[in-house]
Length: 60
Image (tube, rainbow, N blue to C red; front, side, top):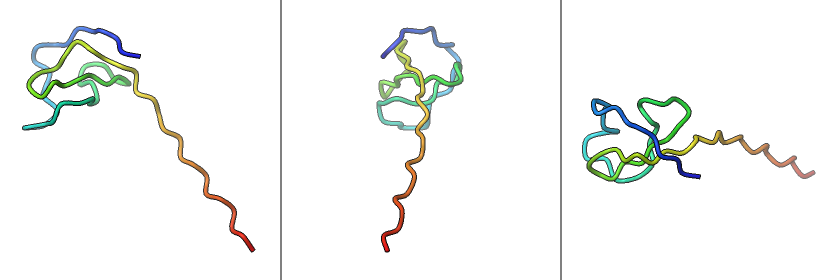
């Protein structure tokens, strides 16, 4: 689910020449913010932690 949030104007870009996409929000821990390829947008979403998948038991 996307949310709309305010971004500080001095927030750093994700990286030089970064492609458009979702990146960790530099102002809101635990959130991602949409980078349009030139600037941050007001769209944010909660970062969902990924749990590792347990390996299958060995056959034998």
